[in-house]
Amino acid sequence: MLGFPGIPPLNFLQKGITNRSDLSREDKKRVMLLSCRGGNGHQSATDTITSLFQGIYSTKIVYPMEVLQLGEYFSGVGMYNFLLQKYFLRTVSLMAALSYPVFRNILRGTFIRYFEDQIKRFRPDLIISVMPFINEPALIAAQRAKIPFLLVTVDNDLRNYFVDRDVRSLDPFKVTIGHELPTTTGLLLEKGIASKDIMLTGLPLRRGFRVEKPDRAELCIQLSLPEDKPIILIMMGGACSYKADEYAEHLIRSDLGVHVVVVCGKNRKLLVDMIEKDHPFITPLGFISNISDYMAVASLLITKPGPNTVEEAIQSRLPMLLDTENILSWEESSVELVLEANIGKEIASSEKLDVLVKHMLDHQKDIKSSFDQFQANSFAETIVEVSKELLG
View: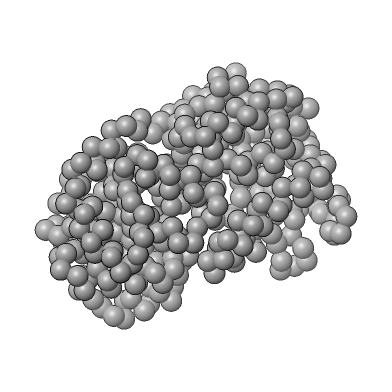
């Protein structure tokens, strides 16, 4: 068992691992995937990668943060998710910033030993990380074992991905990024990563966003939505705040003649409340897997600036209105991306939401043309190709 000052010893052989098997019987190349259950983005990327690798590689998913569980009930990931659900987002941002010296000075050696232990146990041929904070120790362990390393980023601000000042002393490794920004490419170059090892692919996209859709009329029929009205899609994160209901009610009271779809996610109480209201021009939904279909028929998206949601909207060429009243610090770069590309606007006041929505609907053609500046998302093709290259 391994431990560090003030924290009970950690049993690394029992925590943070899924998809175990008898490796001696496997003849496929083995990929160890470092993931996290904090928020939805990392797990979504994990699901995307494992589906792309299915039948090609043997994939082992490891959740390093779960080894930091204190006692039976408390864990850092659990606290993170709890704060997200309660919308204490500034607290989450502060905690992330304050954790840099902890990961750099206290946990660094612990995580290096942890990853060395997992490498000995699983004998991976390739390590892929989709998570922040632990990449330096993971890279060191991979370098010592002479295992190639691939970092898949799921944010447009990568400050949390490397908490040390410089990684140029480590062996070269590949990084995928969503967009070329000062907080992505600029930061990676400052860390000593060569430009040839930085791949612009777009953020990981779920399969629904990579397949051709039926025309809008047919999709509207399938989704039981009106074809003759503009559809406003409201998504306020996996835990969905009650501002979604406020926005929906405001739009329905206006004379815009829109139909509103509210994705309540994991907020069961909000879903029940909206169902009980039974408004004919509001469609409330719970946690759904076919969000790509709803984006395909929508005229406008009202959302928090989560990087994955923004990426999916870009892929769907869906204009956005961003609720930026209370966001995570690393989501600010996604706001700047949307505003500078002229594919969306900030919601300055909910009282003037109908005016802003009308402007977006009236100028939809011009706004949609702004999506032409983005290159097609190539993550799925690139991750498969680069993995083959790294595996030799």
